[in-house]
Each structure stands twice: as C-alpha cells, then as structure tokens.
Length: 191
Image 1 (cartoon, rainbow, N blue to C red):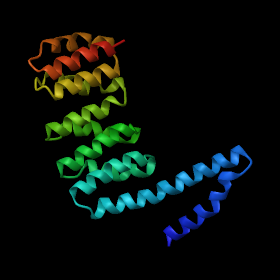
Image 2 (image 1 turned 180 degrees about the vertical axis):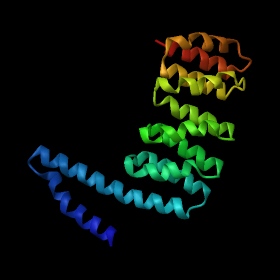
Image 3 (image 1 turned 135 degrees about the vertical axis):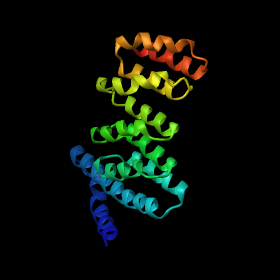
C-alpha cells in the first residue's frame, strides 16, 4: 500500500520539474529525491533482514549512501552485532556519517575484541576531529603492530593538536612501514 501511495505522489510531482518557476522545480526535485530515498530505505532494510552475510554488508554500505537520521538506529544496532564483518561495516559507515549520536558507541568500540574492528573504530573517530578523543586514542600509539598504531597516528594527525608531535615522531622509527608512513602523514597534518 505504501509503495503505491509513494508512486502516486511521485507521479503527481513529476510535472512540476517543468514548472516555469525555478523554485518550484527545485522543490519538486528535492521532493522526488526524498521519496526515492524512502523507497530505497525500505528495500535496504529488507535486504538487511533477509539477505545472506554479503547482502547484509552491502545493505549497511547502502545505508551510508542514503544517510540521514533514519539510518542511525539500524547502524547502531549492526555495530553491536556478534558478527565481526557486520560490526566492521557498520562502524565504518558510522564514521563516514560522523553523527554526534554515534560518538559514544564508537568510543566504546575501541575495546572491541577484534583488532580490525578497533582499527576501523579509530578511523571512524578521526572523522569527528574532536580533541576530547585524544586521551582515548593515545594508548594505541604503543600497539607496535603496524595497524592500530598507524590508524591512531592518522586519527591524531587529523584531530590536529600540535602537542602530539613528540609521540608521533617516535613512530617514525617503527619496524612497520605502514606505521612510519602514517606517522609522517600525521605530522604533516598537525598545525
């Protein structure tokens, strides 16, 4: 029923795309985009509920492309799932969206048992560019694993606090090339 109603509304709005008023044409285009996203959202939710693992992961990334407040609850739910790849994808998308409502959950995910999930969480937190995250990220510079330390260096560089130069410079002599590269990049990002 809802799909038919949405289709009927779309058909009623489409002629306004040729209206003489630019303001009406713009409003019609935005209205059609909103209706399309709502339809896509229902379809994505269905794939997330009923699909196999790969379909669910694709659905999570599709939620990121749809964006908006309406996708946040399902992404937060997926970030708490037991499947590592589902958590990973949801956290990555939450970072791309950088919604303030997701920040507390992302900080909590710094304690995830999976190093890959912790790494993507650090990457996600970097999108917030929030100086209050520095104390949570600094310990990861000590990981010496070429993954978590590298992500932490890049995140701290993006947050951009000049007082971080010293701990980042220590990473320039890391045995891991990815960490050395990240440290160099992070130092260039600092103010």
